[in-house]
Image (cartoon, rainbow, N blue to C red; front, side, top):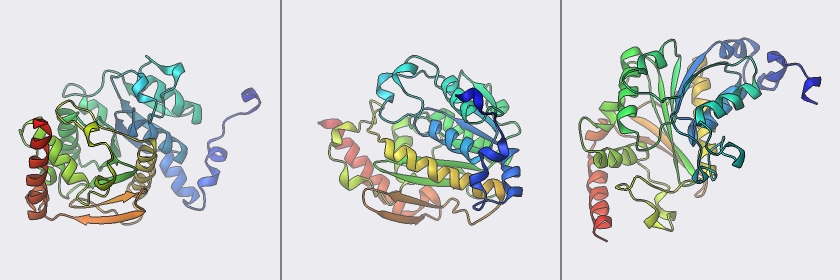
Length: 292
């Protein structure tokens, strides 16, 4: 049956027209987006942007699909178990748009190839694992140095928390203050900084599922899909220069479980008194958890 259809970019993405103009759709076609990590949120980001009509991508992931990915990752099926996530994601995106130009970094990203990964990129979207501290820190620093807008949308509970870093604005490091701190400190700072409102916390019914020391935590497909909607919309606004972008130190969190949207503002980033208080509380809670 598929052989009866021939791909047409204009027809494939014609239903986008109305929310974007024909000229804007043509501009999206020529934009290049980099996504590091295409498992949980990153895989859905890629497919969302492919359906938006973005044609050029750099994607990176060194991991392969496993059974524990089935609850949330767009490319996770029994038929893809053991296959490289980046290859599967690229195939799915090309199945949406055969004209897609996708450069696959199957060994992931690190200091040796990060420059190449960001070459010619109009936007970076963070899909890295929560615990990929070194890669995330280096990636956002390089984006700031190169003037590349960078978006991270965290899947928390059954919602999404968004932080965007625009050229010339507050940087990732200025906001989170990671520096050379220990990984557990970075984890706490990321959790507190990306979602100051903490909308997801009251309905965590099994706290034992969160263990920063063991690098594990719960997840839902609802959060990943909400994140992709948020990231795709941020991408549209940034790539087309259209609409207000809430950039750091501003952000927002939407929680579908609690039917709540909160816009956050933390001037000074990690130095903000409210952030400092939240970090102190987080450290005490984490210390108690380790003693159990």
